[in-house]
Picture: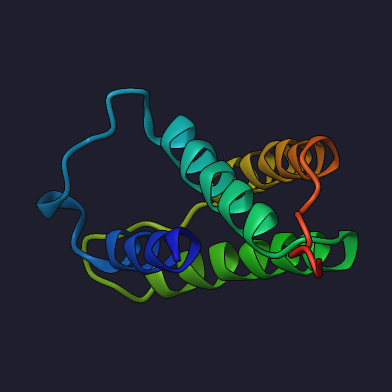
Length: 113
């Protein structure tokens, strides 16, 4: 559930006018990396398995690129390849964290006894 709420939040914040949004205190690129890392962690833990982890990561990368492309058509927004790169760094770090967490804490199967 957190993954899908996070997705909606990232999409909304990416498409509203920039002047209506507070500036991230960590800086723009750090904000991108942190947001996409959090999405990768939530998606990677919520959708277990290596295949799912890779699909979540690729989906987030495509989403980030699509949002940057959309921003190029919106007044008051600027598309940047550096934002896509920051997103990708966050996705890689978040996916690594989620993969490690999944390995350390495997999903419990309900007992049959």
